[in-house]
Length: 261
Length: 367
Image: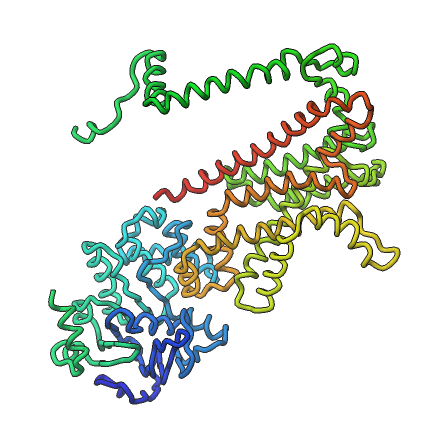
């Protein structure tokens, strides 16, 4: 399908069967502050998108609108064909398919790792407890942390907690995963263990939108890299073109700052 | 090993030697602490012996006015002579085994519920215990069935009345307070407004006013012939009043739970009630154990105010006993000291349990 791989700041993407997320002419304000301006974006099934940009550019807000952690005031977002608006049923349906991994993990501190993982399958998917436990152990093994299943989050390192958070999302068997700066709260030596898990996920074909400044990760797995500034998508391109031949001056400046050290 | 060098040396020597070391370090550490220690010792010497002499050495338990007249110390004889009046109020004398049994049942289910923290197997029995226990208490107190003579609740009094008002107050005020706290945080304007107005109005008036209104004003609005029991009105007044305070305590707890916990629950597609019950409230309530117990202790003591609408709670029955014979009246210090001791015992137990609960709940998630 012809989904924009070059810079698209104005063009309305045509929704297609393969698009799992379509954002069209979406605007968001915090009071008088215009946070997101005329965002147009479509994401194909299995696509990996990395979003970067200076702080305050609206990149986190953008992915947070995609599972309605943030509202928007105009335009439309469709996820998996469902209009994401005020309708509570739609919101719950979308959230069952879209999971979010947070900067600060947001594990539930009063539950063990295993309980954190089985909670949503049991209560939302109505899965029997035994089955949910098996599922949880499967994903804990995949993020290589199965031996910590009966500990509490507070007893784990940051990297371990973030891997648990990823496994918790996977237990919902989502179609799409959103990552909101998943490694920025981690000590440097723990970044790799989390990125490794994310790379594996990407290679298995998970649809991913990832707000991150890990440019190595972007180069390795991204199908498209988006640069945002002041609430707008400034540049959107494949990683090769994005890093080797950025078109906008703002992108060039950002890349020079972020890659210089 | 070098790490061991920093560890404090283990206490050695005889008990006496260790006591000297300890007191030098803790009591006579510098001239200011020495001064405070000496001052405190002087104060204790000045205070304790006279109280001890009054309460124990020169006191009597003889339950007669003549016996009391002979001693210079406390006349516990007053309490001794009027014990059953103080404990049970005007409940028919021959039937007083019933409130005793009712209190045993009540204390039993309270202890059973509180022990569930330590013994998780008890948890599923908490609700059945209350569902069965409360009617049993009602049957014992009221009677009228199973060959028990009927006792109007205007004859209830003393410790059973205080404990029933408090226990029923807690079990109803707790959920009501929770709903009000959630209502105040709600996005729905109608629910939010109702909750805010309710909380602010009730918090803005003294309990004595609420009780007085419940007792005097409320019946005026009822159609002729319809009456609601005085005890029930007082109980409702206490519940409504306590719920408003608890609501604000719970709101503090809700605000202390990090935003991220709400977002994580949302993004896992948990419904509002699921995320409240499974994620938010377990954390919020744990944070507010001390102020919640504080509210309960307050409420327990506030039940004494029902005396203004003619119910004789535990403090009221002490007054009743003092008035029962003019000769006893001058022994009010002993009467109130006894009541204070019982109140203190119960409130202090609540405080101790609160501390224990906090410690026990924190065990699971050592950081």
